[in-house]
Image 1 (tube, rainbow, N blue to C red):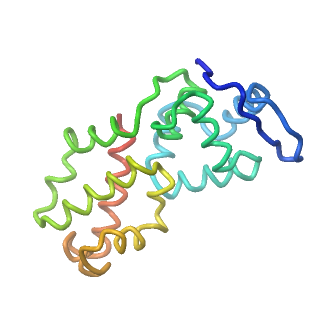
Image 2: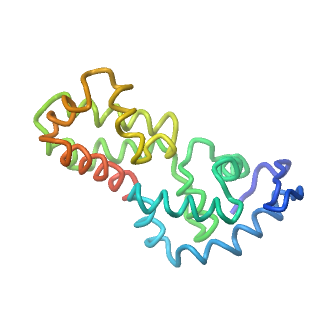
Length: 183
């Protein structure tokens, strides 16, 4: 594990400034309370609902979105997913860039083959681009309707219809995220 930016400063839950090293020690000490293996972390992270629950629990102990983003800076991993940084810290796993995860989905998954409608495939590609550019915060479950609007190729019901209905759209959204974290 190589920390590349030790000048980052953190504020702990009591408002006291702490160094990057102190923050990392605190984090390492608390992570085993949330998952026991890389596979368990991957399972939690690949589902938007359980990922959100984990992020909420981390925020409750003072490790919120800003802290996690700073953690990526600490490891010179701004182009990586927070999952990769957590797996790296916890299990010394290799850091993967979001673009690698997107390419995995595009070239090895069967996700795109499941849909005949071009609009459905285009929406999945759009979602991958949003993830690649903005990270995991962009693909939370509650953002799905907003992402459809941002796609600008139809209403929510029109996009859902291209997948075979609302339930199928949500299923594809979850399946896409499962594929993202398979690698």
